[in-house]
Length: 164
Length: 184
View 1 (cartoon, rainbow over the protein chains, first blue to last red):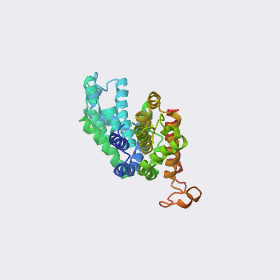
View 2: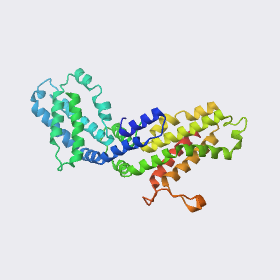
View 3: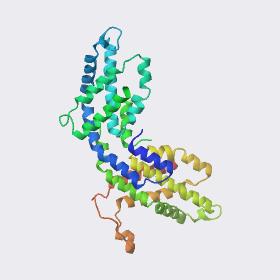
View 4: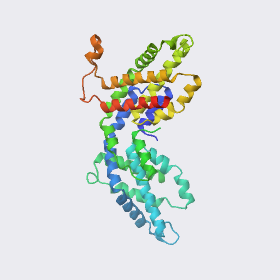
């Protein structure tokens, strides 16, 4: 799993040397931002159901055709799966906030996502809409501190970019 | 390879839940500078630690450097020093990551079998690792005493924290214990 610390260790190991001062500086930089990231992760973990539900509702509201027979949100099973997918993205974002890099999203969310959505004939526009809603929904300091919100929004932007 | 953070994520992902217990990670961050200082203390003194550990091992077992011993001739002594440095390096990585996976995956996996095939004596190797464990603890705690150093007492730095980084000493010791357990 890629993070600042593992990247530093991997490069030091490839060169067969002990962690150098500049390696430790890199880790120090990551640690300095970590408090804000963990705050966002904590808040997101506590509210992930509500966040995912709101985002899901927003995308169905924008694309009501998804409720038509044969579309991706037509039956109760499909609705549950759509909601689960949004929650899945939010969970991966929480992981990224913990790790301090985009490793979990890259490895478990984005890699192969395009192929899966094509195979299942799913539109990506609703996903983008749901995540954009979440992107603009967060408010500092109501939900979390400004720095934490910046970290959280940056990851939402990252997923939106990967889907669009 | 995992660090303390990705370990938490991988564990949470196994049950498709969010990472809920962040207390360990907050502790890692709160003591982040201490950890970096500990890593720096070992990395800066690595070559001294390695040569002292191997020298200590040989002092206790002179047979190693006599004909037929495993540190005779120089070529094998050099291999021994190199291996001690490699072990210490991976322990340092583990201490930096806050997780033993890098040590397990890249150093200890198959090490016992390799040493058995090469005829390297386990007891001597373990002794050298034990010496390095004591050295690492001393460097991290950085609390030399008159009783041990005598006239050569030389205090470096000032006492920053009262507990002398006891948790990091324990963590580093646990990684050395892991090496010892993997070898024996």
